[in-house]
Amino acid sequence: MNRIHTALACALALAASVPAFAQSASEGSCILAGRLGDTGWAPRMQGVELLGQDGKAIASADKAALASVKQARLSAPALLSQCDGSKELVLGPDSPGPKAAVPAVGPGVVAVQAVSFPKLRRGGELVELRISAPAERVTLLTR
Image (cartoon, one colour):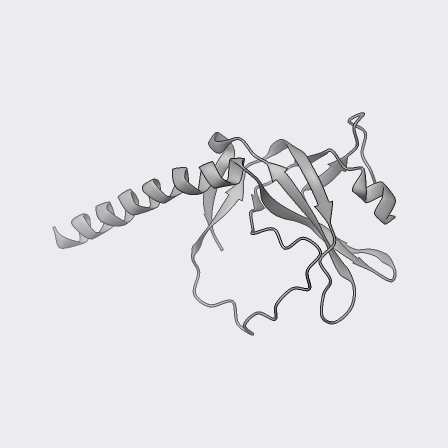
């Protein structure tokens, strides 16, 4: 009976945390579209297609073209993160740590509010998309 209560408490805590993050995600969170290096896209994130104002795919790795991204089509859930803008990213831990539930936006088209290029310490830049995701599309994934 104790395991049932513990599982129920965990499920309720998880369910309560999704709406809170979903509200903040709908106000603007970021996803990564890929990494820019000396050779262009290196790599692009699978499942993220960048779209211009006209709804056509943008395949160029040119910063001017990437800055014109207005939407992203997601074929799989994309992890949401805090937007870093053009700041240099902090060095993270060597190991990812234990698996945990992390926020993600589900498949479909999302509006892109801004594109930024946070610099990586070892060269290159990330392509970071500030998105506006409807709260009902935000979920938690275990990574």
